[in-house]
Length: 282
Image (cartoon, rainbow, N blue to C red):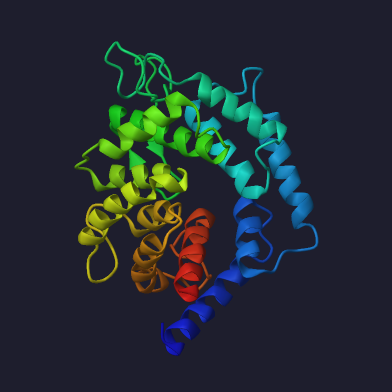
């Protein structure tokens, strides 16, 4: 990376830092960690946000009986700093694991054993499903597939990679051929959290992703925020290279407020900040 490129990203990260400086939110805490500029109360705020998510869980460990909301809460409390032994992590991941191989899952064909997570009976639709990147899945079966992948990345991060149903789900995801690029990135986001022994197989998926990247760093049929957010789950140089190639396009989206969309979405700004920091450090 040239000095000029690094300097340009530094300037945009400075503007984003100002945008996040006084945000008392999940995104604000995480963004300030990227900048190395936590406030004096960020540790207390993070603890509060973790406790708030745990308090919302039911006796069964779920958030409102929802696979998606529970998976999201689990991911968020671990991002905020809860470790695998934290009571909230144990509680939320326990609910997710209890939903594997139940009727209503994406792959439900009357037989159990593929490890997919069920978001509930088919007569209770979960679509439209909206990700933090703003990507919306309107199709019910697509939404159920995405829900299972979100649960998968959560339980992997919570340390349950040795469970047979979790390994079965991983194997199924790594063998799938998907035509929708949005779903392909969701798969990368899930398998990217898998143990390092899976990385050689994940690299084959990244090769395909690299072939689809356009000269401007974007991909057809998918927003750049969706793509890079999920790519950043994969801890290897190839994934970082793809994010770096997308960085100039992301940088060009920054608005006068320091955010990266006209409505100042904190979630999108956090994705952008992380992507630009990856690009600056390569």
